[in-house]
Length: 54
Image 1 (cartoon, one colour):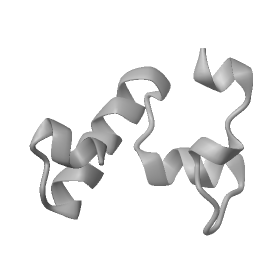
Image 2 (cartoon, rainbow, N blue to C red; image 1 turned 180 degrees about the vertical axis):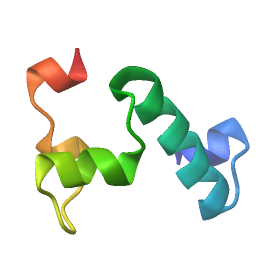
Image 3 (cartoon, rainbow, N blue to C red; image 1 turned 60 degrees about the vertical axis):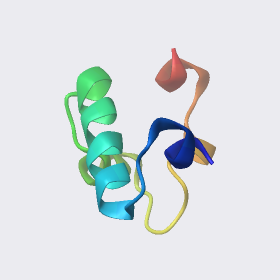
């Protein structure tokens, strides 16, 4: 839904945007941050602590 609202139609573009947002606050791309958290296939957002979100 968010992708359609923002005009992002392709999953590749969404992945790039997600990486940029994650990198801005964690200095790691999404895959690196998931590895850091020890996540394999789990959703990163579902496994974030309050500190991560802040």
